[in-house]
Length: 211
Image (tube, rainbow, N blue to C red; front, top):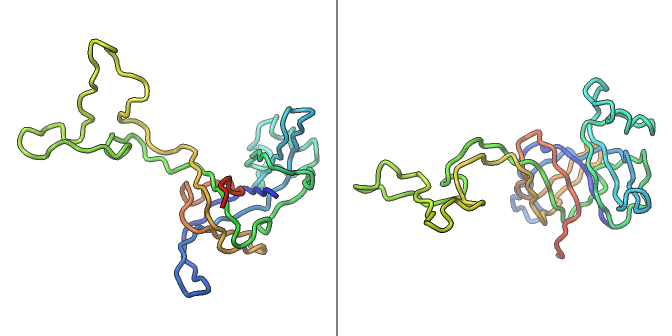
């Protein structure tokens, strides 16, 4: 059965496995999440569950957001996210999902918003090579160089790798292993790094890869 939960990245640390080896892990405050809505094939055209995470005062939500939650007498939540699960028949509006929905050894995909790095050149943004540093190379050592436009097409084609905004986009890291689950503290430790800064919102779901 597929499982999913919303969490907040706390930071990275180290744990020791049963063989005494150091395991780098990311600590995630996962849940508790409330099922705020269920989408059905008959009504919306697809099946999904909407989860809510982190309480928020009413003044910080829009009227449509408040109406969506208050019609079912649910607590107001700051972060809402839909998940399409294989079988969501066991979930009902108002159910609470905690960190123990996952267990040690599970493989998960973690989605988050990567750290924003502002405006970056092609070397940092696309790992481009720099120009020669010897005589005659300056002053364009780190510039992108010739665009290569000729009579045809006489313009720069879309998708050209050029300087621009780097980071602050949705990134998914697949097939990470759940190392430890602490249901009392609502904490999940995942092996390796996950996208985003400390305090960033992340979404955990069963991996789509066949292990």
